Amino acid sequence: MDLDLTALSFDEVVEVTSLQSLMDDFYVLTRVGTTIRDNRGEVVVSTGYQEICKRFHRDFSPSAEHCLESDRVLSHGVQPGSFKEYRCKNNLYGMATPLYIEDQKLGALFLGPFLLKEDPVDRNQILLEAKQYGFDAIAYSKALDNVPCWSRKKVAAVKGVYTKLAEMVSQQGYDRIRFNRINTDGQAVPDSRDSDMDRLPCRVTDGNTKGAGQRAELGSDTDNQQVPAPVVPTDLSNPEHGRNLFEIAFDASPDAININRWDGTYIYVNKGMVELSGYEKDELIGNKSTLYSHRCTFRPTG
Image (cartoon, rainbow, N blue to C red; front, side):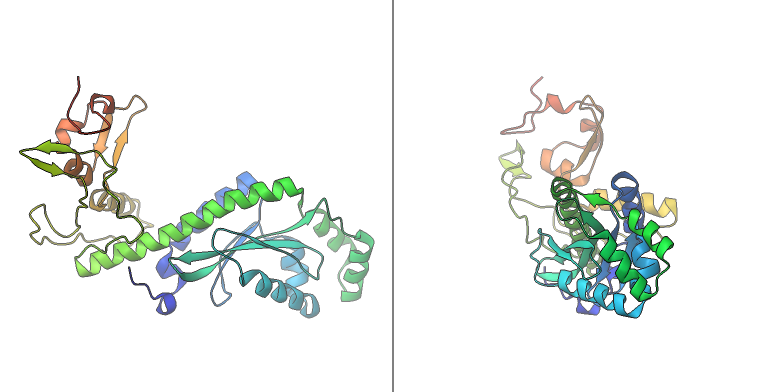
């Protein structure tokens, strides 16, 4: 898919309200402060912002320059799927990983600030510098006490979790752009990242293989006759619209998707699953997935 993100704002690519809610939930679990900035350096999502940064460092000119320098250092020269770590001139650590959609940068995910157990800071020196800046010594000392202190092992674990989160954000952006294009043009946009359908099972009927090597096209029926593209609800604050959007996305997906109970009983399948298996929805729903083979065909074995 040809992409040009230069004309799009971050919130046109990623559903920011949902992302903010997700990051808030992550903070409750991990206590890791996170910030996402777009390519212009604007904060689009933030949670767990430390008082030492908000009230002191970034609110005072000399120390704020150190913060901006840190942002610049962490924003450049980082490969997708990796983190860059930096100890700023305010003596705090931070790290960042870029957000990419295909080969275009969407922004960056920043983590921190934090202190490092293996690289302890000189607290007296920090408090002396704070005094030179004119900060309230008692308030600044309390803010410093609230900065998390991590071991290298903890840093590695945090990087692993948030690398996956960054990948998820990028995937959401890719899918949203692709879905919007489908809705606008009424044509499916090929997913250049995954065209291998041969690994999926299929059912052979009348000498024809259904599902193998084929991907259902949104906006057309099985005979390639054009049908209207779905109308996508945009007010995600409306629970009904959110549910409708899920149903549209679920059925419109070119991939075979099914929802099962814990025992493997199908409770819902999409059109892709119907096309792949060769069975209608009512033939699948209520039956257990174990009744169908996983190799050559989807033909019932019991």
